[in-house]
Amino acid sequence: MSEPIEGARPEPEPGPGVEAAGAAPPEPSSESARPADPAPLGVTRTPTGVAEIDAQLDRLADADHLAASGHLEVYEDVHRGLRDALTALDRRPGPPAPAPPAPAS
Image (cartoon, rainbow, N blue to C red):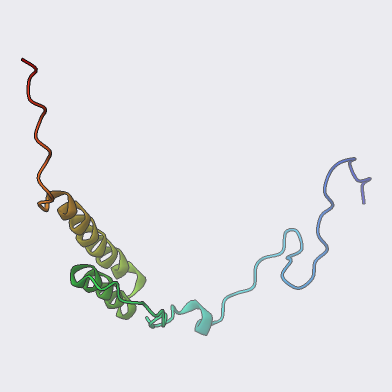
């Protein structure tokens, strides 16, 4: 074995979770190589009280029954709906704008 280099970190000793240098990783069992079936995460959500927003957030539950490859479409759809709801806030009529000051005579 060679002398350790000053300031260098030592190589970890092989043990649980640490492979010896040059050792091949263990072969995955046929059971662990198979992706898990989609399953709900069980995350609870408190309603916001705004029907439009709650409908978009409820749509996220659709991803619970899809493989990961299908999540992006749901997430993008929900993001688009939430963004549209926020944009609509800018278009809603508010109180009238104050009148400009009268020109001085």
